[in-house]
Amino acid sequence: MWSLALNCPYCGYHDSRVIDSRDVNEGIRRRRQCLSCEARFTTYERLQPASLFVIKKDRRREEFDRDKLLTGIRHACEKRPLAGDAVERLVDEIEAELYRLGGTEVASATIGDMVMARLKKLDHIAYIRFASVYREFADITMLKEAVDTLADHATVNSADQLPLIPPEEIRAVTNTARKVR
Ligand SMILES: [Zn+2]
Image (tube, rainbow, N blue to C red; front, side, top):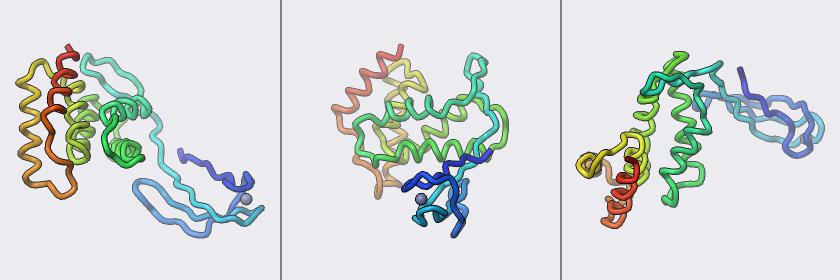
């Protein structure tokens, strides 16, 4: 199914002609011209999955919910210095990857790992926050392990990464991790 939001953003007219089309990130970008006011605008048409079910740890099945994923990641990224659309883009990427897998079911752990891999590159604090909820850190040892993997990672990827976690942030995250149980 194609998502279509093609009304002219200037006058609301329902029809337009396509000036140019190109494939971008799992969708098509189209330059359009309104048939009424002749304004030009761009649409992004994305492929939506028919339906995708997430299999939880306890084997319950629930329909994939983009908003729920978005909320979880937003929560982890709260007050982090990220671009306004960084979380949206991250969720877009994950959705695209899920479509590429092509199945009708996916383990919640698979989605969790996709999020973790991306947050690790995006923001260390958000990564630790998400991990503490998702991995259900039972104690400080598990948290330390997660922080240690970041320290290893940081030595090879420092150019676009934030400085390694300041102590007060580690304390904050530790408190979060304690609250999980
Ligand atoms: Zn128009």
